[in-house]
Image (cartoon, rainbow, N blue to C red; front, side):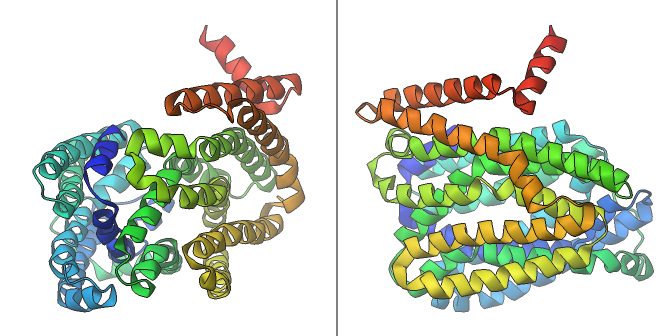
Length: 453
């Protein structure tokens, strides 16, 4: 995080915009390379080394073929986004597809063993090495190439460390029959994930395509999206890691599934709402303090996208529920409906500029969560009203606490003092209200603290 702040202080929004415009191709291609097999491997209880090896060779070969296709398409991509620099940038950046493909099975093995500490160490080590090199390059005037090299080094070192940490190497075996055995679940998952990847990353591309010479706006939007997603991404990945292991084990116990999902929703609400409203409150002084004045135009995008980020982790839990119940058709069906809604919203709000596009994402996020809850009611009788009962107390208390903090801090001019005071006030009143109302999650935290003594 600190290193990213340093890079943003050195580099320009336009340089970040060049990378942001290509994000959709990287995300789409990475999922296409995986083809849903990693998730299919996680869902199957007993896997042989031959099966792992088969998927490994498929991923690697497909990544090479896809890279060659993207290499040839680079001039078209540059023309699409009105910037000839993207030809060379994309050809170098897309090499990360091959590097990442070489470590997919090792990552799957660590996830299957619930070795999340190992995964964290691998990712952290790769990030540290890459960012040190990127900062040195940025300080020496390499501009956007600092970001390109950073992405490549993260992919390279993550894969090298995964090979070292997992201690798994592929057998010299490949079986089309074994590969085919995974396709029943994987093709639906990969179709869903591909749709997801395109639409989750489509906004920077829309801005780059429809607004020529606006790479700085792509940079503002992309970085606003990236930073608002950090806390919610951590929450989503944490709960997703737990749900991957728990939900498949109890997928035939409807009542127990209902209780587990309800508990996860309450836990997420307890954390997500106060974090989100605090982020909106302190957005402007935080951007000024961390990134300097040149990044202030990103603040409106950051605030509106945070309204979507607040509820995004809840959708992750419901998606895992559909997969655990082996309802990949639900998963796929929901994604298709969601994306049709998003296309309609983009068409309706595009005329209002980039803020209109951001608003379309927020509306879409809430509408599609409601759709997922309607389907979860059919699966485990976890309805929209049950969800509202679980999360509304935390939502209201977080909103009230943030309102109190805004009222007290509204005249503070010093950025760091505003951030500190606002954070303390939100945390104090939120925890106080939760305790006074004896909400379930605060009681559990109390019990956990007692057991640690």
